[in-house]
Structure formats: structure tokens, C-alpha cells
Length: 214
Image 1 (tube, helix red, strand yellow):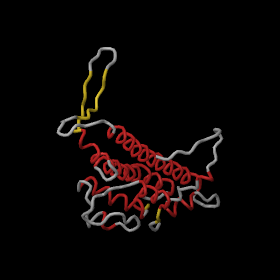
Image 2 (tube, helix red, strand yellow):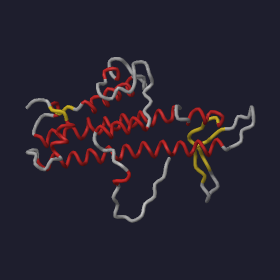
Image 3 (cartoon, helix red, strand yellow):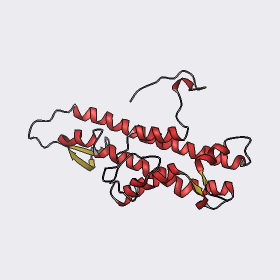
């Protein structure tokens, strides 16, 4: 069987007239659900950083004062407390800002998570559903995610010419640039997979719902 793009496979699998049957459609549905969860994880993490930054920036810091932000736990019963991470409070704005290392790390973790789901789980399942070898299942979007993943893992998040520089569809970062994934990048991947919908098309049986911006 000739190599086939999984994007095409998914489209065919979702077509009830397709000869590929329910098995591939089930895999596609679960793959999309996994991507939905990873996109939600990224969004909630980024929003949480923004809320934390707003709260910590309101803490007054005197010039020259070596105040620290500690991540720890207070036991109200025993009165004991401990911490396992610390940052100078004066550096919080730089660390938690939109271009800071924390947001950058969250985006890179999303890249690795998407690639891992594909490599270690769904690619083989698509192959099994189609009755072919995993090597015959190819997708340009997931190939690009893997190229970026390789630079995150092996080049400390710096795009290289041999990996991210070879991206064909998701041409987000040039060689030498930091791989700094923002929500707009997540949206682009989801949109290319047909997973972006109009809010006006939202249908829920759970009753009234409210829209909030983060």
C-alpha cells in the first residue's frame, strides 16, 4: 500500500461511505480528543501563569530588598511548613511574562506531548485500523511536530536547520530561534485539523453557559 497522509486518512475515516470502516474513525475521534485535552492543558497553564503574575506583581518590593517567592506548603495543623522552589520576587515579571522562560517551557511541553501521543500511541493504532505498517502512516503536520520536538529535546529548545528548519507546513521558527510556542500556534494546528469552531456553533445540553476571556 502506498504511503498515505493521516490527514487524508482521518477525513476518509470520518466519511460513513468510506471503505475504511469504524475502526479508523474511532482512532481519529480519540486522537482528536487527545489533542483537545492537550490544547486545554496549554491554555489553562498559560492562563494560570498570567493570573499568578498579576498577583505577585501586586506585592510591594523595596529597592534593594532580596524578597523571595517560595513555592511550598504550610500545614495548618502542625504549623510546620516547607518549600521546594524559590525565585527572587524582583525577577517574577521577567520569568512569568509572555516572552519569559515559563511560558516558553509550557509551549515546548505541548510540542513534546503532541509528538509523543502520535509517536507512541496513535500512529500505530491508525496503522492497525488500516491494516498497514506504522511506517506507511505519514502526516506532514505530525512530521513537523516531531521536528520541533527533536529540537526541544536534543537542542534545548533552539530550532536547528536539520530539524525545525525542515518543517513543511508549520513553519513557525527559523534556525537559531527559540522554539516559543504561543496560543496562536496551538490554534493553527487545531485549525489545520479542522478542530476550530465558531463559538456561535457551540451546542450544550448542560444549560446556560458563560464566555470568559483569559
